[in-house]
Amino acid sequence: MNEILQFAGHYWWLVFPLFGMTMGAIGTVNKQRELSARRRHREQLELMRVQSGGLPASLPTPVAAAPVAGDDLARVQARYDDVTRRWLDYELDVSKLIAYPAMSDGRQPLTAAFLRAKKVADNVRPTDGEVPSAERLKEYRDAVTEYEVAFELAERDARRVKAAAFTPDERKRLETAQQLLGVAVDQAATPNERQVAYRRVRQELDGLIWLSDEAVEHLEKKVALELPSATPPEPAA
View: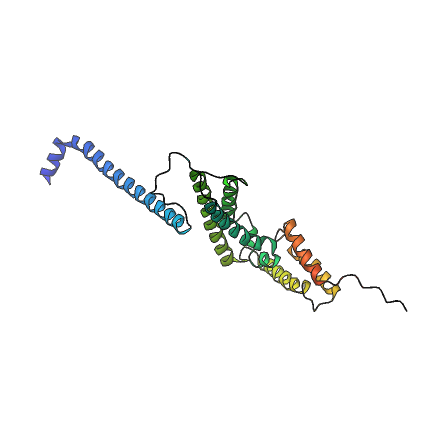
């Protein structure tokens, strides 16, 4: 023990370089971990692009932007339209909005991320009649891929949580609105019953779920289709 203390007393200055070497080694390990995490992230994104028909990231970006076939753009646009159609199924169907309210709530993180991804895809979408370069098409394809992934995550979460964010009283109002909605579009109900049910649906949802003008119009048309037209005039005697 004395020998160790004597050694430390004579060579105390070695502490500083040893400390620097130790911290440098720790920094190297942390940097390697960070680089490894980034590499895994890039590989995951690359896998999503390949599965969705995107260009592999390993291919070099062309120096000169060459025109691309219209079929490539059509396929990407079809993917975008498919996601948009699935999203509108929630936005316009009041029954689905009641069952999965998170899909219309921009305060939900995953729903907000989906809406941001949609905005990005809209902004980079080639204009009608435009023949995009390979680089521009890749940008649009990547944006549509993120749009698809964001929607899948938002939909999965909305179906998981359902109405969990509401209080018991609010959930009871949602259940009542769902039942009344069935009456409003039921051909077996009388016209007066359907009209009353429709008004009650709007009252129960007030303050709970925001309905867009398009959703209201869609619902009113659906209810109107179930209502008979004006009573035909009595035949002349």
